[in-house]
Each structure stands twice: as structure tokens, then as C-alpha cells.
Amino acid sequence: MSRYWSKTVHQLSPYVPGEQPRLANLVKLNTNENPYGPSPQALAAIRKAADDTLRLYPDPDAKALREALARQFGLPGPAWVFVGNGSDEVLAHAFCALLKHERPILFPDVSYSFYPVYCQLYGIAYRTIPLDRDFRIRIDDYFQENGGIIFPNPNAPTGLALARTEIERLLAHNTESAVILDEAYVDFGAESAVSLLPRHPQLLVVQTFSKSRSLAGLRVGFALGHPELIEALQRVKDSFNSYPLDRLALAGAEAALADHAWFETTRAAIMQSRQWLAQELARLGFEVLPSLANFLFVRHPLWDAGKLAAALRARHIIVRHFRAPRIDQHLRITVGTDEQCRRLVTALSEILAASPSERDAD
Ligand SMILES: *Cc1c(COP(=O)(O)O)cnc(C)c1O
Image 1: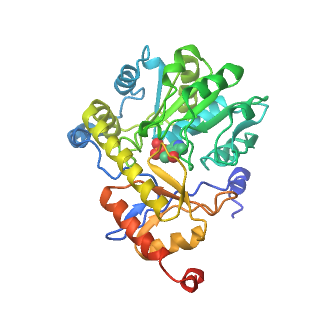
Image 2 (image 1 turned 135 degrees about the horizontal axis):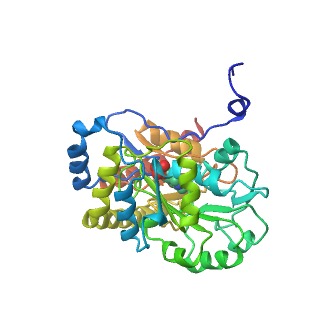
């Protein structure tokens, strides 16, 4: 608190990202990073771009990357593509550009916890819509007046995905305000709504290079949608930062996008490990939601989630525990390499084998 702070800053309660501890031999399963490195071709392109040209500003329009993304997703051209410094920035611009209206916007009560933070920052009213008892989004609950709708598909932190037919049903009912789908995890087995874009001018699909392309450290995200929506995002961006993507990010993202083989191999490996890990956790007595993301959302009926997270941490394994309503007895566990998954399962078996007195000790 300071008298120099603006009223806006006084009232903010910022998003708290998962921690990035610097511990050796850590099994880090708390922020849904990809356990496999980025495409070697992307790394080579970044190294190559690190030369004297860094004295020059990058392309403010990121034209080459936007053209490549349009081609990749079968869209008419770069006017259908917006890129930003991570999809978090793309989402922030989308809240400002498309979701700030008179009526409250809608998103699930259990969802990406950045959404209410953006609402606070931009003064956007919102109403949360409860997931059903099985943590599913019920599309019919969104058939009501609103200033816009946003949710991740698959949802975070549940990992549950809606079929494209459900998204189509929502779009058919909701034509007067923007519908934003945050597809950060869509490459791990869910159905993307990108093919619906040409017929639905209210739809914006947001994706990222952070998860399936293993470039969380490079900060590249993008939005796909009708040029009218994209122009709104450009207008906000050009009122904020002309150069959100630097030369290294542009080079790395373009090369990563071109390396189909790396993308396919690594995401297939993660989906396979997810299946194994889900099976093993179920065998240990966990309730495991059927995830189509690169993480599992689990709960043990006999064990406090906070205590489990602490016991894992003592064994240098970090998972995410949200102290939030409805989900404070769940853990969100990123799918790691097979070796990391094995270490997690071994550690959990040891912890669960402990005596009840040990269980209750903090
Ligand atoms: C990880 C994540 C993002 C943000 O990704 P960045 O592109 O790294 O900013 C956005 N939405 C959801 C639901 C996420 O889990």
C-alpha cells in the first residue's frame, strides 16, 4: 500500500502463477510445462536470430508468423490471426477489446483463475456459472443474457473437454456477444473449434506455444477469428505495445510451427503417459477426472490434498494445489516424462502406505 498507488492498483488482487523453484533433481509437475524440450529446429532458429539484427525492432505486425499460422489452420489469411506475448497477453487484450460491455460476462466457477483478475483490471462485471457435480461445463447454463462468454476447452484445472457439437450449440444460441475459447490444451486430444470460425463471426479461439510446443519460456500465444474481432485486438495492442513479440520469439515460433514431426511425437508421448499415470493413480485409490489435457485433476477420498502436496514436496515432487472453493481437496498434476511419472507414483505409494498417525501429522 502506498499513497502513490492509483486506485486501480490498490484494488487489484493479482494472479499467482505456480512456483518456479530452483532445486536440483526436482520433479516439477505444477505448471503444465511440456517435459520434452522445444523442437530442435526452433532452438536452432532462435540461435541463428541472435545476431547483430537484434539492434533493430522486430516486425510490429509479425506478418510472417501470422501468415504461417493462417496456413497451418486453413484460414483465409493473416487478417484472421493475432499474436501476442503469451496467450495470457492475448487473453488480456481480448477482455479489454471484446468482453467489456454493460452486461456481465460468463465463465465457469472452476476455471482459469486469471479470468477474474482481468475482469478486475478492466472493470468488467462477471457472473460465474457452476460446473455440474461431475465438474462438467453445461452449455445450457450459458443460454442467458451476457456481455460475452469465455472458458478453456479442455477446461482448466479439470482437464475435461467439450465436444465440438456442444460448442456449436452454444454458438447457435449466443450470437450477440463474443464467445472466447481458450484452447491452451487442445492439442492433447480434444476437438478444436477452429473449423467453426468461418461460419461464426462471434467466435475467438485462443491458443499458445507454451504447452504443446514446449515454448513457455519464449512467450508466444495467438488468437484466431473473424478479421473484425482480430482488428479489435490489434487496436488494443497498438495502444499498449507495438512489439509484443521480439525477434527471437518470432524466429522460434515460426520454426516450431514448421516442425510437424516434433509436435506429433511429443504430444503423442504425453497422451500415452497420461493414460498410464491415470491408471496408476486410480490403482492407488485416487478419483481421476478423464483429462484431455497434459495434466490430471485428482482427489484421494481418504487423504487431505494439502497434506499430500506437502508430503510430495518433501520428496522434491511439486504438484499444484488450489486453496479454492470446491477444489481444495484436489491436486492438479502435470503429465511429465515416464521417468517423472514413475517417481511420482512411487512417492505416492510410499506416502499412502504411511500409518494414519503419520497421515494426520502436518
Ligand atoms: C497455460 C494457460 C494459458 C497461458 O499460456 P501462456 O501462453 O503461457 O500465457 C492460458 N490459458 C490457460 C487455461 C492455461 O492453462
